[in-house]
Image 1 (cartoon, rainbow, N blue to C red):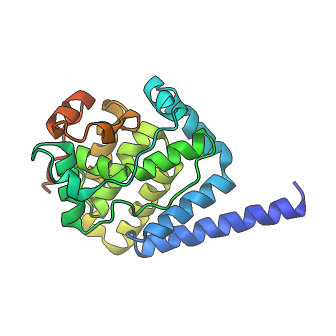
Image 2 (image 1 turned 90 degrees about the vertical axis):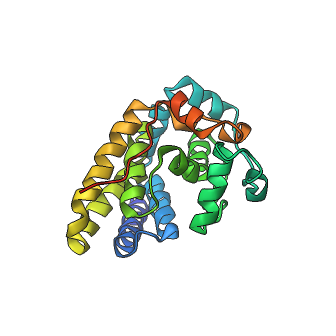
Length: 226
């Protein structure tokens, strides 16, 4: 490795550390999350490659990737016209009540299998929230990352889980039990369920949410009781 390569590697490590520290201060900083992932992809390509290999072992995920499947940003007004028990209606209600933007995620140019998978994971993040029943507070978000880790081995998921442990222990130790419960429950749920990444949700918005969950082997996350 020459000096230029070593310098670039050190800069990538520093950028990753800076982004992780930003997350520890405020886990809601979406841009910091994507900064972490972009730095990880640059500095640890072998780790992301292993994750891609793991995801592509599932034939339905592999087919979705070979098709370069994507979908437009959901039209919330249109989804609100779907039946009240449907995935589309539940998704629109979730996005609207949370004050979210359905197209919030950082865009990425799809040029290969890896970028296709990363884009699809970003694009469907909030659908996973609805299907799993995970809340949008820090324990719920990290619980969903544990679910994702079980299903994808995505490096970002592991980094965020580790960061949440450190942040909770330093700043909110009284919430540690709940965080651990969400992580353990999320991982078990993800290991048991069929791959959410393989689903073409946008082609079946009108399907009942309960039917989706039954098909995928998901029991929605219950409310945590200390």
